[in-house]
Image (cartoon, rainbow, N blue to C red; front, side, top):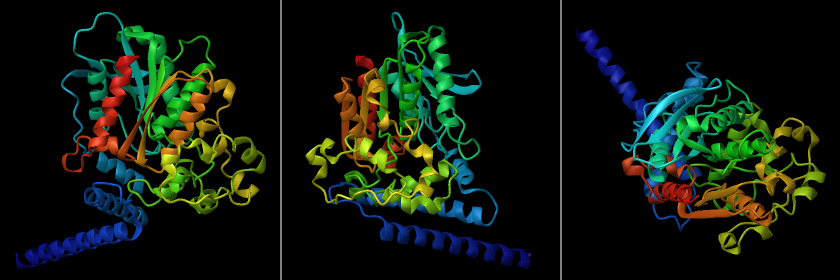
Length: 410
């Protein structure tokens, strides 16, 4: 009995020390790496959130080094414990849309005639996230907008390489367009949308649907802080929010390479723009010009940084980065003119802010109607915190309200 107690005590001490080391590392990493701009109003709350995230990712990386499991698998396992509830004003059904799992949320309130529909592609860098993880967000959108919301359970990288993710979303969208009436939806009133990487997938689906004259046209796009270009990672927002949680400037490239199953050693050259051929620099310069970004977004400190010297060997390893199915900001004008009305939500303290602003400008220049909401206290991933009590931020809730308002007004 004494030996058992000694072992138990020793194990408890070891576990306590491990937790202490993990917490200490999380705090050290946050204060060493993070630089929260002075204008952000809840720095302590965000730091506490970030310390927790750092601890979990560090633990996942440790398990990967020890060959227990991959870091991404560990993170998926952890987020599966999120208590994500379905809004009481809707009910849900799971379907298989031509081999792609989806969950459809139907508002319970009575409705005369056909409803609008939203196909939603969740975020998570194409590597994490799930239907269940997003069900509090997407069911709220369904209730507040009175629209039928379809959430796509697309396959994730690295098990399923790019472009599987947007192709799965496209398959589900095509199925829904063909069978919308079976779900009480007008097929001419179907919207495509998503957040972060899911917003990127949504813009690619819009491109693909335009090539399908046999299908109804999409009614609109809903894009929540989307990532839309991989050409210039030194736009003002990338510099101003370079060390702003939850998404750092270098993390955009690092996880982008992970998503594409490419060597992360390419990150430094890609951050400098060495992957962009001279011809493409000239072609796309007018679309990524800082003149297209309103002056008020350039008041915080940044430097004009030209792209680094072109390195063909870098470009040859990541050719997809500059294709319109990865960088939707680079879609040609002829196609963009045919895009549907679009809602864009951007966040002031998000590295991807200027992607959204430049895309908004391109759409408007091509005659596309854009509804825009800018969250002045927003940061990347904020809508995922709407139902997490202590780490809830008001701007995340407001983004969802604006999405619902846009859908109701279509």
